Length: 132
Image (tube, rainbow, N blue to C red; front, side):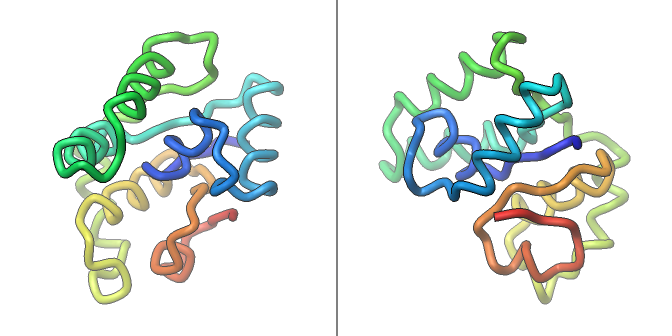
């Protein structure tokens, strides 16, 4: 199964946080063990930088994310925000998911035909496959 992690899921996975649910952790670890693709959207890098700048997450979170995405052995890969993702955004209702980074992440999951690992209730209710 291909999986896409939303920003917080990726950060929580990399810091081994208890905030990440057991089923979410299992999906990630099972996918990595099976050599299936586990992605993090490029927008999550942007969002993490923003969260660091706002003082909402420590710089070490960004460093861990960058390091994991540069190390193929981590099992995590960057999913680009490209024209196909841009075209898929209209499939994510703005009324349900008003935040553009979240819509981009959801659209990326659609393009990749991936399950989205997220705790976000809005994303869970927008009609795409999610796990938490």
